[in-house]
Image (cartoon, rainbow, N blue to C red; front, side, top):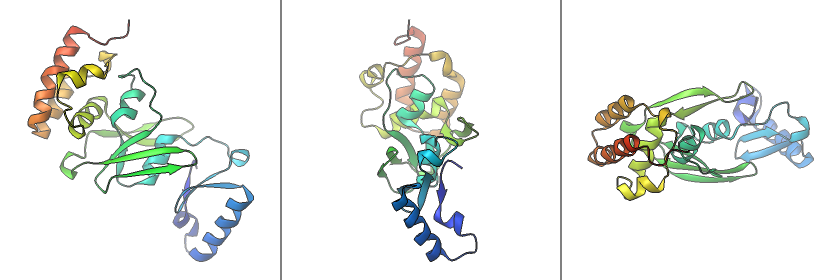
Amino acid sequence: MPCFSTRFLAAGQSLAQIRLQLSRWVKDGRIIKIHKGLYTLAEPYRKIKPEPFCIANNLKFPSYISLQSALSWFGLIPEFVPVVTSVTTSRPKTFETPLGRFDFRHIHKDFFWGYEQLELSDKQWAFVAKPEKALLDLVYLTSGGDRKEFLEELRLQNFENINKNVLEQCVNSAKSPKLTRALKHIVHLMELGEGTEL
């Protein structure tokens, strides 16, 4: 397992004893404490490297990878994204961990859809927004995200990874004037091919 929780290890045993043993292993350098109640094996003892997306899903539930991280994953933006970005129906929060920074943005439960479980590597799985939903999540959660200038600054590329029909269906389902306005600009960029990597 890429990461594991205190409660998972307990499984009917004394939670206090498990926590004490985990504390000892952290001091011995055998495991790494990612966050309260969440751990991973230290590098010399692990068989697989934990995927950041998998860790993010375990840090906050329910949540799914979206925004810049998902856009970068699908090759829709050229930039490397050092922070793992997710959306959640619970409170927004940023986790600073030994394995990186994880940022969670709050989204209304009515807009919590449009994601799927993807296999990343080493049989690790994570819930990740579909390309169209990741873009719309970013627009929805960004002030001025429906502006033409903002969308142009994203330098969107590889438009073949965006399904125009799915994008329109997502906007229609959301019933958001902001996303309706953004859709016109996004479709225009797709038609012009602006930002496409040459």
